[in-house]
Figure 1 (spheres, rainbow, N blue to C red):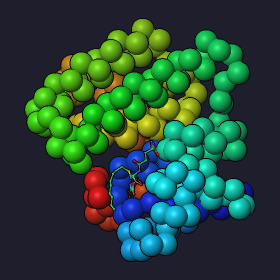
Figure 2: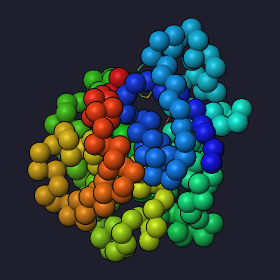
Figure 3: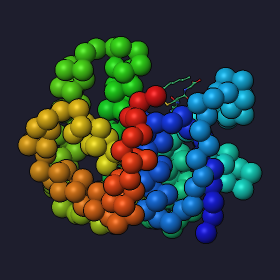
Amino acid sequence: LMTVQLFYFSSRSRAQAIRYLCLDNGIDYEEVDVDQEWTTKYKPMMPFGQVPVIEDGGVKVAQSCAILRYLAKKAGLNVHENPVVAARTDMINDQVEDIRGAYIRMIYEHEGSEKDFLKTAKVKVEYIETLMSNWGSDYILDKISYADYNLFDMLDVLSLMSPGFWDDVPTLKAFHDRIAARPALKAYRDTDAFKLLPQNG
Ligand code: 0HH
């Protein structure tokens, strides 16, 4: 099994789906906390001057979703060659990224109120609910893929922000419960290390 280094700030944010994918698939990873010396030491080392970045045997991979797909391939998770199947995972992932982008602009750039963000996010999530309910599988596909971890983390964020979030999205509630119950993720999410890790930096 491989050990990779994960460079990130001490928060969940854009690293959390990567952590889930690693833990759930036996990928050993070492956290490198870049909070101290970010500008002087770490930023100049990064391919795009940002994190998350993973380093695997001297190779650096940047961009959170590229990292998810890279690790999924290495872990033998299905990264599908069939264009129709691949499109399902990728389109859900990109929808999640649209929601995440709006979230990050709200938090860090104070763009729009929390209420407006939640209203827009709810509409975007309800489209995912309808698709997943029609597709009828336990995960986005019949087996877990990189995008499931990203969707799971986004749902986690939204449900923590918004009481009653689950009421209109029963398929996604069942999906979230199913992923949260995966043994490695359940054990990790029960730790103080996870509970105390802030969502944002
Ligand atoms: N599209 C990229 C990805 O998905 C976006 C990466 C990114 O925005 O990987 N990285 C940010 C940290 S995550 C980064 O490296 C977004 C939260 C913003 C928090 C900023 C806290 C800054 C504290 C010094 N930002 C640092 C930088 O750009 O210098």
